[in-house]
Structure formats: C-alpha cells, structure tokens
Amino acid sequence: MSADAPTDPTLRALRRGDLAGARTVRLTGPLDALPDEVFGLADTLEQLDLSGCGLAELPNDFGRLRRLRVLFCSGNRFERLPAVLGDCPELAQVGFRGTGLREVPGEALPRQLRWLTLTDNRIAHLPDALGQRPTLQKLMLAGNALTALPASLQGAQNLELVRLSANAFAALPAWLADLPRLAWIAWAGNPFEGGTAPARAPDVPWSRLEPGALLGEGASGRIFSASWRPGEGEPPQTVALKLFKGVMTSDGLPEREMAACLAVGRHPNLTGALGQIVDHPEGAQGLLMPLLPATWRVLAGPPSLESCSRDVYDPALRLPPAAALRIARSVAVGTAHLHARGLLHGDLYAHNTLWDGTLGAAVLSDFGAASLLPPGSESEAWQRIETRAFGLLLGELLDRCVSEPEDIARLRDLEHACIQADTGGRPLMAEVAQALSGLAGGARSDE
Image (cartoon, rainbow, N blue to C red; front, top):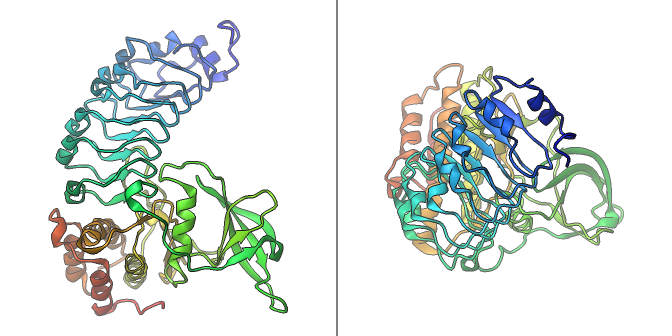
C-alpha cells in the first residue's frame, strides 16, 4: 500500500487529524508498520484493533500508548508476542488469534493482564510470568501445541475461564481443579481425553431435508429452519439445521461440538441433536436439532470487554420468582443430565440459556466447549467446577427477581454453597437439582 494513498478510511481520517481525542480505533490495513499518527492519541486511546492488517511487529515505543486497555492483533503475522506489550501500563485485554505465534516471552505480558486470547497458534510453552498476573481472569489457549501449563498458574486466584481444547496435553494438572474462582473450562481434543462420546442420535440423509431461512450464525456454524421427512409416509417436521463451518473456534474444534450434541440424547432442558447429517452435496457436517418457538430468546448477552467473564443482561429484565426458579431448575436438571452422560458443558452461562420469556421454560444450549469427563473422583472434581458456574447464574437470576422468592434465604445458601472457594465442598449438580426441586414454590419438572 502506498503511504500517500491509504485505502482504509479510518487511516485517512487519522492522518487528517479527524480522530483527535478518540478512545477506540480500528484499522483494516494492509499496513507495513503501525502508523505514527496513532501515538497522537496516546492521551485518550483505550482500544486499538489491528486485526488482519498484515503486521509482523510493533514499534519499540508502543508503551507510549499509556491509556491503552484493549489490543486486538488477530490474523497478523506475529511469531513472537511483542515484548513491548509489557510496557503498556493499563493494557488488560490482549488478542493474538491465528497469527502463527510460537513464542510468548514473559516480559510481553502486561502487569494488568485480565483477558488473554492466543487461540489457533503454534505455542508449545508458556512463561512462568503468566501466573504472576494477579488480575488474570480469562485465558484462551485452544488450538496450540501445549503439553503443560506453568506451575505458577496455581497462584492465579482470579482465573475464571480457561480454554485448552485441541492442544497436546497428556494430562491436566490436578491443581487446576482447585483454583477457587474457576468456573468455565474446556479441554476437548487433547490426547488424554481419548475418543469422543458415543452418539445417541441417528444419521439423517440430506435428501430428506428441505433447508429454509437462516435463523442465526455463530462462530462454529449457521442455523437454518428446515423441513425433515423422518421416514416414508411420515409427516414432515419443522426442525433446526446447523451446518458447521469446520474452523477452529475460541472454544475448540467443531467436530467435538458435534460429538457432544450427538451424545447428549434427547432431554427437555438441553438442545441436543435429533440426528447427524450425512451425504451433504458439498461434504458439510451438520446436525438436526429441535426448533424452539420463535418467541424464545437468550436469557442474556455474552460477556463484554468490560465485564470480561460475566454476561450482560438487559437492564430492564425483571423475573417473577417462579420464572427465575423454573429457569434455574431447568438448567440444573439439564447440567446434571450432561454430567451423568460423562460430559462437562464448559460454557454454562445465561447467554447459552434459551427461555420462553414469560413462564421460565428453559433449555441449555451450545456445546462448543463440551469435554469428556474422566472417570471416578477426578470427574467429580471437574463437575464441581461447573457447579460454580451454575451458582453464579443462580445469583444473577435471584438478583433480577421482581420480589424475593419465599425461600430466598435457602436459595442464597445454595448459591453460596455452589460458588464457595473450597471446591471440594461444593455440591454436585444432581444434588443442586434435587435441592431446587425440594424448595417450596419451586418449579415443577419440565421432563
């Protein structure tokens, strides 16, 4: 690109001085180097997105961006995480996804690091400095070549979400399950996990489907409405059809998501699969799933840059106590079913909970972070990690009740039992589901 004729309108505006005082800048490139004009925003710039610009390095004086809090550099050509990131005093979120990274020097990790995304790279080793960042909350490492985690992470007392799928771990360190705030973890596609869970849904020939309108799109695939003819002479059914993109997501591999959906079987509180698509004309992989009523909605939005690991709710959302309890029980029963099938959901959140918007009928969806549980007591340790995720969700539901449920004290006690720092003291999800069923005024079973 000629320096005199940038094609990016944001870069042109930057060079004209039109962005004076800007807090957020996104450049689309291509770029040979970071434009000097960016440093003219050093007193205000908080978020800088350089994704896909073709950069291979950052300038030595990058630390001049003293107010920078968020940096996205995904899809560039960095083989080494730039050490200059450590010079940025306020930098808390760093994203270098799919850049070819091989090295992560300790000095490249900012002191205020809160959210680190290094998905889909070639990293085989992480520095001890990673566990010396006390504000670290979210760690995205899927799709690398890691065989171990630095022992220093035992001290990461605020770490809440970890993605380790599609690496080379022969085992996970036992201390990982003892981290007091860890609530969401995924490890599918590592050697220690072995095979996939057995499928509990039939094959569905593509010839028996008539795809309809696009209903939605996520990182792993697109969802359509579809008409399905289960068999000769049987009436067609309206279902949801998910076609996978086949690319690495921040949670892991799409084929592992498919395997988890197939293993779930049919359950009233889970969006498991009705069948697996075969004979697609372009070789695409896909699943048939129950189609929920059009009036159903997600309970909350996903975490924001500010909230990091917490969902973002509509500020106007207020729940009748009976509806909140019914949602909580539905999620608890669905999660307990998953655990009984040997699966960890890995992403138990309100943004993966669909509900009817009125009475509290709900299902847990999205198995992109699902992992096979190990056998025995080790399985229960990981199940109790997911118990914390449920406890956080329960607290969020209670906080949004229009009035206090009759059993508010017992519900708060259950919430606190689920999120307590002593991981071994948390109840299993089967016990949680039973406790919710026993509460006066609790929701009846949806099964």
